[in-house]
Length: 207
Image (cartoon, rainbow, N blue to C red):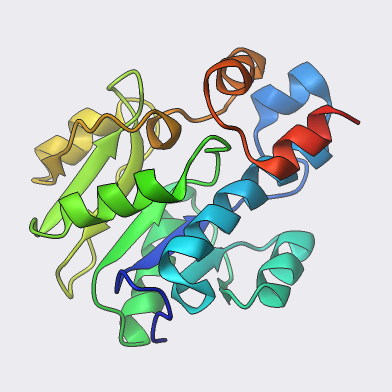
């Protein structure tokens, strides 16, 4: 599982997919195509940074798995049990394939840019484990490790404090596209207004 990107990193992106994905956003807009567009814009940026071979998508959604396979990404079945279990499964698959540094990127960053992601990975590389908090400072946008071990993920509300308590180095970087995730209509509106939102998301919004 050698990464074809220039960074040497592998990225794990858990993707729930289907009707259960981004339930708050779906309740507000009732738009599964938009949810998929946000995920795929995030994946497109990630693949340009680490190369398709460096991207591990953890999902049990048929459509998302098919998209990932067509794109040349590694697909790992979601074992169930939530985001932490999915992240751990992806990291272990990457390590088993010979990956070096590995990071978990959540798939809800339509304003993410290549420069931001590359900066976060380069800044995190000197640390054994690290995380980049979300814009509010309480959640987690990116969790990474330069070790051969599996970093302990603790995603969900309040995850920044849990990741800090687990010994992961906190990196408060000025990377608005990475740190802003989209969970509902308000956060989507902020992204569209203030960030260079990806083309798939924009196309879905213009339908």
